[in-house]
Length: 638
Image (cartoon, rainbow, N blue to C red; front, side):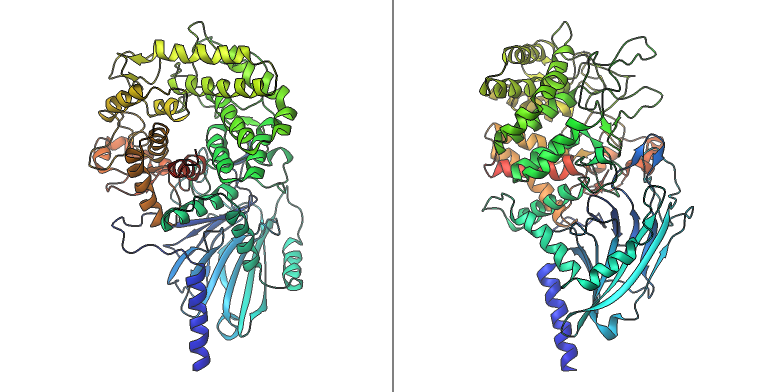
């Protein structure tokens, strides 16, 4: 009896040591019940409500190319006994998931140390309690994964179907004293992965290695977290979210061991179950800036190098059905939207054409120069200078129209080519990117004058064509009526956040005008994307909240910035320290027509209650990245 009590206390101690529990004192209810683990190679999602793994995918990206979507190789892995855990969470804000049961603990992880495509489940407890435990799973090519009611890939209909041949294995080994670990391993073979012995090799590796794989994985991620630059005065909640954000950033970057060589370093906009598990340039730019501020220089550099190596230039010329050429008209390097898993450029083409997004050039320059200036990696700058100069910076200049704004594109909210405009967001990030590039060129005694001049011209053109009554900047040059759909655009805050516009009085009047249009009702500040009856546009956008907070901090207004950051902090604290795309708001949802609610199957954004996580979760650049940038700025790391 005494031994049982000691063992129970020992298991409980591990839970207290490793676990990040939900704060029961908060008034915000938990609304997100899934946890993601990834090693940049495979990705799995634990379902807290179901008490098991929803699925495991063989890659972290959506599709390898235009013809091949990524499907799970196994689904619904659960304890055969049907026993439910007492609680579940991330271990010390790492990628390792822990479910605590009465008599044992279950860990779920992908391995960074082994850098293999094997999913590990490790049960820890006394030998008597765990030796007969088993897991059930759905497997077999063509079999449907049950219980999935939202799209898994944005252009692939339900149901979610398993692909590949699942492999499994198990072993049991002593951990410490009377405590043992029972390992359950899952992997696969398919047309790209031929090693039918991968699980056998992994089992042999575990048996021959001292210690525990789980401890090794925790130590790996904790070393990365502990080497990051954190302000010493962070609150406990802020520290937890920042640490988990480091993990999210790391998990979202494709490993150097992925089979597609051009995929290495690309960063997903979201991890599963979030639908945006694709490498957008825009999202990656904010993720890379966050990595840089945290001191994750190796990861930031890999993210930049991915875009500098990846095959692009697919849309140099693109004649749409209106007869206009929407391509940049010269060779370019950075994708105009995003990338396939194999590294090739992808622009999300549909019946209204591709997305052509010239802001990607400016955002890349901003992220690149932020990395170079903070890391002082001028060797990197010199190595890639020819490509960055001629296939990024020069392309921006080439895309300037006669009015000195960047030519019409799909915009920050991706309307393809049916609604192209000269967007404030696009011109502002391109101007800021050229400013920073000009400064770096001058510092390195390289040609800089034309980039400085072009940046100044674009900035002045924004003031000439978007500034209204010297009070605020509208969302684009084309909309003239205050009731036009994109006249009031949440993307307009970026030109203050990125430092292009430093006029304090203009920022103040801009906020006053936009507060009347895009701020949600209620005492707490929060902002929508556009005035709209579309639930994907009119709910509270976390990224916009955080960029507004960042802008406030640029102008020294910590009092206005803190409530925006604090609300996200409180939300994340009860939702496993993850950051969503959006948060629901009932007053905004009441504006949504019944037929619009049908988009729930992909947008995950139709709720009748406020303060719930919606959209894609977990978000990376627009979530963990944006939160990191705002929080670090609040504490003086600007």
